[in-house]
Length: 261
Image (tube, rainbow, N blue to C red; front, side):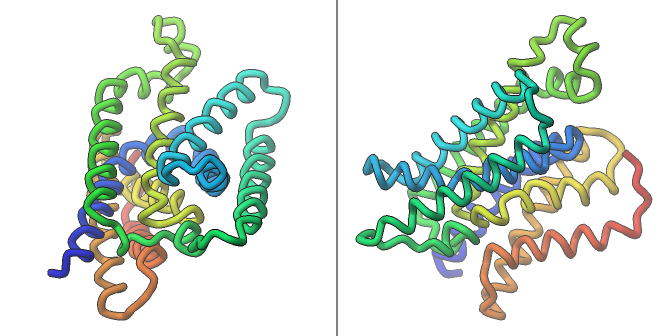
């Protein structure tokens, strides 16, 4: 197997493993649009990376984390409905990012790679970074699993039981921002949310417990990565969109099952 294909498969599986449990929380807490907003802000992170002359992947991660903190602060103030707030930030950050990137006329930027991903260009350094961050996020999720489940089921009751709801909710958003930053290399800004949501939605129809849903979502995401890369290899289709289409196919196959969770 060619090295570039092996790196792509390993990178995709790393993202799918961590996207499974995070996507499950996104489905349970109806946070799909939140992920979309963070993904769109990634392009703005690239702009700041170019301005400051720092590593673009690091700039994207910092940009997503900052926007996650801003969203948490705005949600606490509740001066606007959450979906309205997300809609404004999602489109404005994407538009601002596109405009700013276009101003760097002297810099060669593969905009399509950022929008739709370029998993086949993953190198050894990228692969190690993706796996380290994925394992760190999985470890953090395992540590926060019970409080996260508690605030997902009933925030007020969790607060009465002594769980720091705001801190746990903020931690979830920061972890999601981190995963979106590393997933951009795999499926791109416009398709990241699909990799988070579709495997989790498919898993929901097949499992009985939250833990099983998270594990099966990771498994389905990994299968989608392999199927999508196989389609890209044999039919020369774009890798990122092929992965998302494979995940969609798996979801469609689960529609025949009765929803149990």
